[in-house]
Image 1 (spheres, helix red, strand yellow):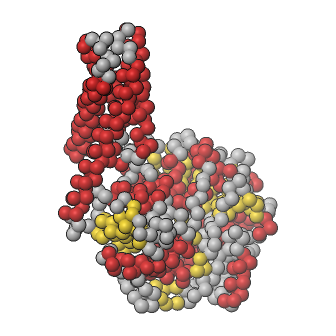
Image 2 (tube, rainbow, N blue to C red):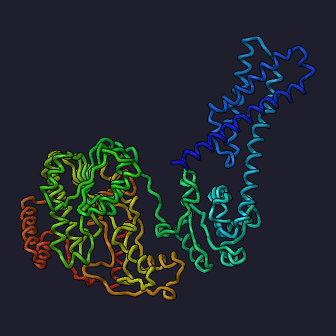
Image 3 (cartoon, one colour):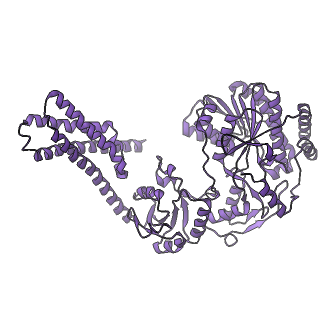
Length: 639
């Protein structure tokens, strides 16, 4: 608190000093103009001149204060930043002229025109001098502490580089920029903010050795994933740490650039385009609604909570059986939004329908996002009854209560593993989708929908955290099969599309998210190893351990391509389901409950195979050869 008070005090002091300097500049300019016009101003008395002198000293700085000129950070000013100052000076002189016209004092127009010219020169000059002195001091301090900071090369001599250099000249920066590297021959051998531009990028190793650089910052926000991968390959041989900056729009926000420079993440190499979300659509859907999220502490559930809070819900109810996860997201949201009444966290299992019922009675949710589920394929193969209890019974309980208490919408977070499932987890997810079809047919008020997508980057228990931990432990990185492929999406993008799909849902749909191009897991492993500055097989070994029980070589996102239709968002597709036999569904559901409660794994799988007609349990053995799998992947890729 003392540091904040001290900072505010220094800011006010600088503001006051600049105000006084502007007042002094006004007085000096007035005397200079009077000197130049002394022969033609003989008809005006000293009192009249003193009057106009008082006006320019007081009125012009006040107008500049009103226009917020003193809030600007002039050491970072661009030409466009001086425009408001010129406007305020013009208005100030016009106000003085109008006042003097009414009081019939000092009505001499040449004085005001010359005053405008001289004052602009002085006011801009003061600020330019401040910037020059500031840069000179920083340069001196940077040279003094050169041994403490990291010699750094920036790749890319564009707008992003210019923005970075503008801030990294500060002596507080941990980076000392020793060069910029680019492929543009028109930029090579020139300078950006006093920093030499070298090239081409293919010579990055030699350039870094010449400049004794220890870090490389990639400042190419528009570069494709292939280009980033190419640069990564080149940089990996330089012995430098490689970092990257976000897109230029993010650089222009309030956070310092040094806080936004980060290590390269795997999503940078996947090259997914930023999805444009219909914010107004989501806002009208969420705003002033009571939203309930089951599994709210998990990877998808917690991101749902973060994004829901952005749209100002009436209340957000986070339900999770794992208290540590629930506590973490609760504290994160409290830090961001304060200890607000909007946020409620309840520890409960979706298996416990009575506990869930009490939560629905108390909070009366308008929208339910059901993200609670068991998702680990091999573990669910070992204990399929637990997958039924948590995924199927949990979904039925939550969907039933949504109908009972007339919730507006119920949204299920489904999976690509529900399509032609070969494992228990996928089969239970497909049955969850069938549960929603049942309630769509019997509910008179609640609209039910499911959103299906593939793997999300960095989710708990996913392949990327596993590979990262294996690399940290010096390997080996274990992959089940050299040809295995998966679809990937970032968690924020997936959740944003879930919210938009939920907003447009009319009941009974299964929404399918465009996951882009599938990624070979072995390529993912190579990229992660390179991101850590290591070489596959040289520094980190890669081992293929065979497909796990229930695992596919590929994942499908659709049950039937012909049923797929586009929505208003090009990243979201919809598949409307056929009418199901409700009596048959209830018989199968009750049979599944009985088998799960008896903990008979074989019988659970047998009933699942009857209930989900697309379930083909492979017990870990792929029924396709590698070439057949590859051909099927190509046929299934829609986007």
